[in-house]
Amino acid sequence: MISCHPTQEMLEKFANGELPATLAAAVSIHAEMCSECKAQIAAYTEQQAESGFNGVSSHASSANVNDEDVFAGIDIDDLIAAITATDEIDIALEDKEKTITVKGKEYVLPRALTNMTMSNWSSIGKLARSRVELGEGEIRASLLQIQPGGSVPEHTHKGFELTLLLDGSFEDDMGVYGPGDFIVLDGKHTHNPVSHEGCLCYTVSNDAQHFTQGINKLLNPFGSFIY
Amino acid sequence: MGQTVTSSLQSGAKAPKTIAMKENTEHQALADWLQAVANERSKAAFTHLFKFFAPKIQRIAASKYGNETLASEVVQETMSNVWRKAHLFNPDKGSPTTWVYTVMRNVSFDLLRKIKTKKEDNLSDDFWPLVESSEAEDADSQFQDHLASKEVMRCIDTLPEEQKCVVKGFYFMEMSQEQLAQHLGIPLGTVKSRLRLALAKLKQQIGGEK
Image (cartoon, rainbow over all chains, first blue to last red; front, side):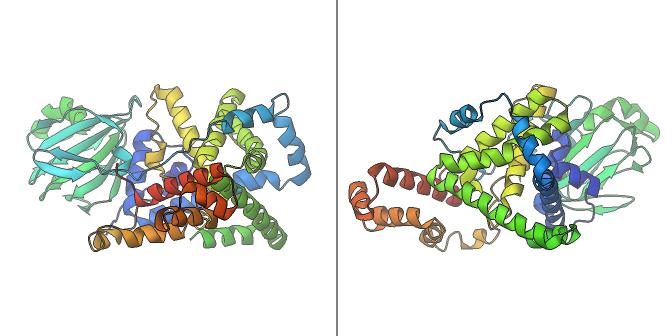
């Protein structure tokens, strides 16, 4: 049972194509696992389409004038001829499954991640991480694997941190999470995720983590390692 | 699900009945044109679609991105995807306007990403697949019918009538393309293009071999 979902605002922005790729990927993966959010996204998409395409045409006469104005000076027939000159059609084959193996464990990648470039895996203790190269500056995405019994030292976030659990489970002082859980934390939260059975997460953050306890303060420079 | 959204939108409209009726007939015409593009590669139908959607897309994109040139690019890309992907439109799954909207949304996302991050990775179809992944039930039935003949027959049955005729004649009655053309009283070229479209569609539905 998935207990953490994206906010309505996020779902709506996703439906409109307004999220950065790092976050759009996360919402897309979540929606594949969560029929409620999927239905909600479909509803937002439909609303947008209605207001975009039908909304304008309901101002009947003025819209008709505009329709012609918009393309004044452009030869529509030429455009149409150029587009229809090719007889090719796009065959969208269903995606072949792509798997990755991390520390001897195999995972099926969600479709949203299948065409992304990922760095080599690097690891510290029971944590292993691969960066997903999406080129969105300070917003960075990674895959993070926690091996059974592993944990991320207690930390807060200077910016926001999104953890989408893909496989396995982990828990922190706020609860236990399973596949599909979409957990967003910001600077107000402190947490110390522990995974007993091990897990794989897709994470997005816009700033390094800030470690808060004892020896782990030394780890601070490594905050950017993990997320 | 599509049903409930449409009806809730319509009930919120000022003059629900007339608007609903106008939308229904409009949607029907748009859906017919999309199918004519898909099945017959009809340029006339595409011209109707272009005249309906292009100005609206131009206006939506221009107001969203504040840039007429970018908006024209969105129009061109979207409409050429409509031409090349019309066979992916499924009237049972949603309205034609929603479908074209999703094509536009995907095109815009990839275009903007290219501008902002210089990446041409075209991720949109991975995030918002235009084709739904197969149902979970497929996993169970996968090995019971290893030649997938039931599945193939089911897919053939979903083809438009004229494509169905050609596929059945060619593959099951082993008629040649020339015989089919004569039998159906249509030009040989039409037989060929119907076969090609039908096969593309089947490949699409069945998944094909990589």
